[in-house]
Image 1 (cartoon, helix red, strand yellow):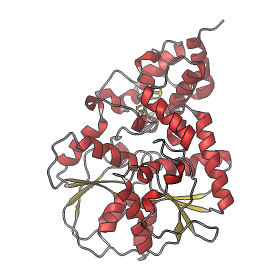
Image 2 (cartoon, helix red, strand yellow):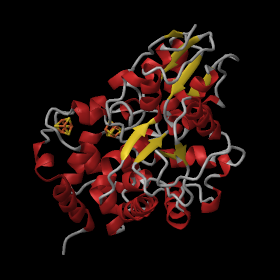
Image 3 (cartoon, helix red, strand yellow):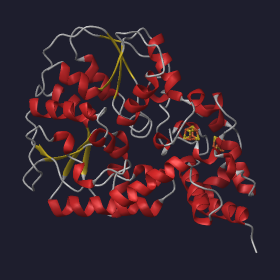
Length: 379
Ligand code: SF4
Ligand code: SF4
């Protein structure tokens, strides 16, 4: 009988197929991985150990990958490293070899029970908008606005969703909200819980189809990636647009005019799932470039070299010790650029940066904003 570790090696081979055989252990992925400055977790070693059935699953290293895509972009042999990480996590869960980290396991339970990672009541999803007069989506509405769970349920993050509404209304966009939507399921899939991902995704796809949804505005790059690139696997085909793409287009067409002069120096953090995963680098910069009176500064490690905030791959729901937070380093890079405003276009990044900022002595005039918040101020 095979040991469970050998079974993992088999499952890994099955999931990676030819691609894993292509890995020639060059170590480029390990050199690109942001964890190289923090711990002993290195992707090359994990695959080598996984193939040999030697991985120490108790170390927790398997859950470190933030799916930032840096290694995938640099691998000379096209090894689908993130798919392999997911396959490893899936196998470990299936075979009961190691436990899902406690905090993440709680999030997955919440997703299963309530359709959102926080475990909030489903009926409260649109509470953030209760003082606004946003119409319910119907089949004659052009866009469904599908805000991320973080901006829907976390009171300290909801200003991002409120600002998006302000911007959409200023541009005269026809949009509405739906009740009973679920989380897009991204964290479940990246954590290895494929069944839960499918359950959440299928709930949404059925609801969207039955409601006549064709076009969807999202404010999270994670929702963007999942709805645009992964829902089609389940026959969910919708036109998905990230708010930064929509705003940039509206400015270009003269449908959104940013009239209020602003002051200060702004830098932009490229979220992994907008930039490296989907190639959306220019639109947010076009928006920032159209603000009157501000100076835009690129920080160290921008565009495809951007440093992950640490929130992808389900890690936004896990405890990360201060000494291992990429967001601390990223805030240092933002400060070193000379900017007094750090802008991002992702609720996970926003949440991570704000949380990390609580433990840092940042200058009093330093602010961290989601891109819609900044645009709403310029209207
Ligand atoms: S960069 Fe690609 S080929 Fe090189 S060790 Fe990593 S996975 Fe293997
Ligand atoms: S996706 Fe990012 S965190 Fe994961 S192994 Fe690759 S470089 Fe490291």
